[in-house]
Amino acid sequence: MMAKRDTITSHLVVRDAARAVGWYTKALGGEELSRVPLPGGKLMSVELRFGDSVVRLADEFPEMDVRSPQTTGGTSVVFHLNTTDADALWTQAIRAGAQVLHPLEDTFWGNRQGQIQDPFGHRWNISQHLRDVPKEEVARAAARAFGATTP
Image (cartoon, rainbow, N blue to C red; front, side, top):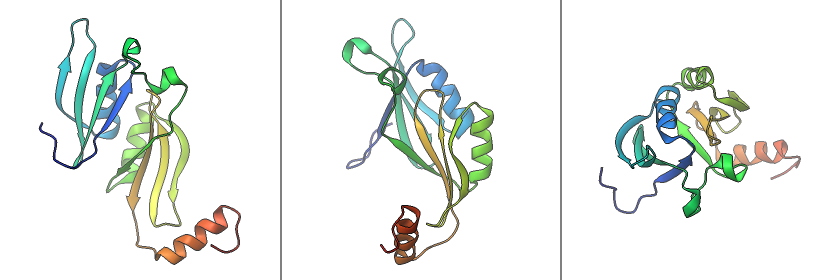
């Protein structure tokens, strides 16, 4: 697949990319678009489509300093996956072995959202838009949630 101009495509590094492709398609509904296998069984790149977004993933290559969250001890990145049925996708991911980090719930910013960690160390918000919330209301609720009385 040719990349669009002026886009950002996430590139996840995982241990056992072939297993990860299977997990992402089963648990999160990804669709495999292409793969570049290497001698020895590792995958240099796999493109997966989630709705209208493409994510690439690859095996670890420690000799090239390409490492997964499992090797580095965590990640500071969270992928945000919008869906029309958060409950169904949530259940699917949990049944496939995702770990719950933040339970699925209705939020003050108008989404039904929760956060999981996949078996490869990556974090995902599963989110469904429920209602539009004025930005002033979101700011007040965020301030309350983080201990302030005014935004």
